[in-house]
Image (cartoon, rainbow, N blue to C red; front, side, top):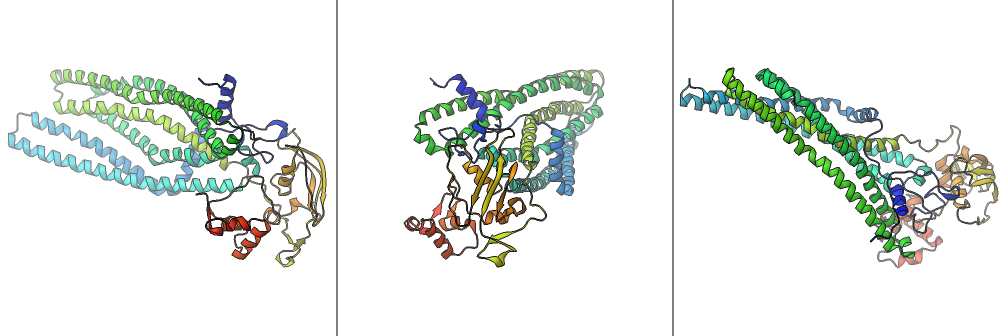
Length: 541
C-alpha cells in the first residue's frame, strides 16, 4: 500500500509532468546558481519542466518551418513524389488488369488454348506493372530517407548550436532531461514524419483519388453505393481519433513525468542516500510508473482499435458492393471481371482512409515535438557584445591585447533579481584590490554565487555597474572577460575522457607540463598520480 498522500501525488505530477516554474522561494530561481541541479531531496532545486506532447499549438507555422528544412532538397522531393505517384498508379493498374483476365476465362467464345494464352499474357503484363511499382517504391524510399536525414542533421546541428549560445538563465530554468528530450524524443518524432508519414499521406491521397476514379469508370452505380458509406468512415474515424488524441496527450505528459523523475533521481543518488530517501523514491517512482501505465493503456486501446473498426466497416461496404454488383450482373449485363475488381477496390477503398486517420496521432506527436525544438531555436541568445567592446588581458602579457589589466574589481550600487519584482541583491558595493583575497559570506540564498555570475556576465544587472580596472564589464567582450577569470564551480562536472584533457579544457593548447603544473597548484597532482593510468586515466564513459 502506497504511503504517498494525494497532495504529494498531485505535486509529483505537476512538478515532473508538464509545468515550468518561474521562481522558487526567496527570489532564487529553481535549480539556479544558488542551488544544486540535483533538487528535491535536501537540495534547493525547484520544479522541473516536463516533456510536452499532444496537439500542436500552431500546426501551419510548424509545417512551414519543417518544409523549409526539406526544401533544401526540393529537386529530390519532386523525384520522390513522382515515384510515389508512379508506384501508386502501378498498383491500381495492376489490379485493373484482372478485369480482362477474368472476362477472358469466363467467356464462351474462345477455346481453352486461347484462354491459356491470354491468361499467360495477362499475368506477364501484371507482373511487369507490379515490378515497375516495386522499383518506384524502392527509389522513393531510398531518396526520401536521404532527404529526411539531411533535414534532421541540419535541425539537430541548429539546435545544438543554439543551445551553446543560450544564456545561463535558460539552463538554470530548464532541466537537463527536458533539454535532452528535444534532441531525442522530439527529433525522433520529427524524423518519423519526415521519413515516412509525409510520403504515406501523399500516397494515401493519390490512392483514394485513383480508386474513386476507377470505380466510376467500372460502374457509376456501384461507385455511388460505395461512396455513400464514406461519411460513416469519417465519423467513426474522427470520433476514435479525438479520444485517441486526448489520451495520447495524457500519455506524453505521464511519460515526461517518468523521464524527468528518472533524470533527477539518477543525478541526485548521493543526496537520496544521505537522507535515506530510497524507499520514498521507489514509492514515488512506482506511482509515476503506474500512472504512465494507466495513460498508456487508454491511449494504446483507442489507437489500436482504429484499424479493426475501419476494417469491419470496409466489410460492410464490400458486402453492399458485392450484393448490388451481383444484381447488376443478372439484370444489366455487368461483366464478372468488372464486379471482381470493383469489390477488390471496395476493400482497398477504406485502407487509405484508415491509414490517414491512424497517421493523425503520429502527425500531432511530430508537430508537437517540432514545436518544442523550434521553441529552443526561437529563444533569445545571450546578449551580443557592443560594437565598441574591447579585449582585456593580464598585465603580465601586455603584448596580447591593447588593454592589460591589474585586476581591481568594483561593484557599485548593484541591484539584481532573477525574477522581476523579486530582488536578490540591492545596492551592493564591493571593492577587491589587485592581489587581495575577499571572502563573501552569507546564508543560503543570500546571493553569493549570484555575485560571481554577475561578474562573469552570465546575467545582466538591473542597476549599478561592475568595473574591472575602471572599465564597465558591459564594454568588455564576453569571451575576453571570461577567459581572464578563473572560476571554480559549485558543482564539479567532468567530461568523458582522460584526466589531462579535463584539466586542459580551460586552455586546449596547454602543454602536458602546464597541465601538471596546474594540477600541482590545485593540490591534485598527488592523487592523480595514484590513479591506475595517472593523467591518462579515463573518466566516465
